Image 1 (cartoon, one colour):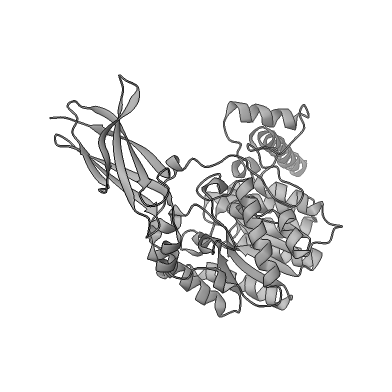
Image 2 (cartoon, rainbow, N blue to C red):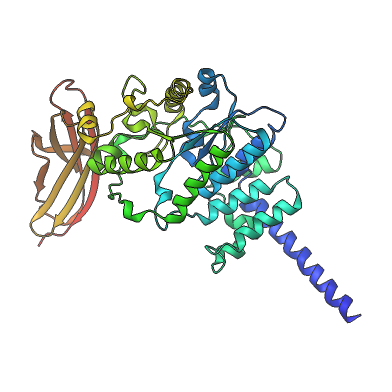
Length: 450
């Protein structure tokens, strides 16, 4: 009897755990995540021929529209990109597509961020991916993938291992009243789930369109130098695994980098091309082509600042333009040739090709008692000449007032009479060519007068 009582207690605890876990999952998880949408729509194509897939991070599923690419290639493709998809997850998606559809081509949207030390894993993204992949699959496969994650040396001694048992810790809803209300109405069946810019719902081919446009006055650029010495060997081995898997299964593999604001390349300068050259040489050892569309010639992909929703992703207009360029590239390289001649491979050539101002950065440094130093950095091509105008915000007049008119110098000083918080703005204009081309940036700084 004692054994049965203990057994009933254990079963009661398991049932109680399942109920509470289910309730928390219902209220906290969004009705769909990046991973669940990808896998749900992938499984819906079980009886459909898929010739080509795209694997990679959010830049993959937000920047590549399979329907556009298919018009050029004549293939049927599906976007298997997911949020923060590490190379390990890309390999898993690739293996699944090969097994299920015997695909002939794969496009790897390559984010070198996941090639670096301490960045090669992403616990929440990997757990979310596995939970979504497990849905609707056989129990042995579910157990294998779940236990593999929980006992992965990367996670086994961390809370991530236990957290895997709580899906609502992996997929947390954004805490905004309107979004929460919309989510709950869909979960309760009161509203139909439709594609919008505030949820993860995708099109049937895995593409996620966004319709808003980046305000370049809010763009800030990450400029940390790239170094081959920071490459993680395990991540590099996974990239090699992906190449070998494609080679063994006769899958034509192409590495691409989607476009993002040119300021991200201009700010890095020659260091960007050091990275580019290293990765290209690395992949050429395996006879794999690598194309970075941030340095593509304009006759293949013509850049526009209207193409982006944020500093890392395209909006639907940019995705369409990029997908057309990608379709063209895949068609022209279908015979095994490369299109290297349509890309810049050195800094000087690229910088000379940029004939616009992409953005401007502004740094304000308070020298208490002496004034405020303003330093602007225009991200423009090497043959673009610019002048800078500086303004401060007048609280009483409720408008910006110019205190330094257009000049070649990118530095200005402002000496306030009183302590307080000040707002400054720089406007940079192109001197040669179209005088109407301008970029601006604002910054706030606190100052203490002596």
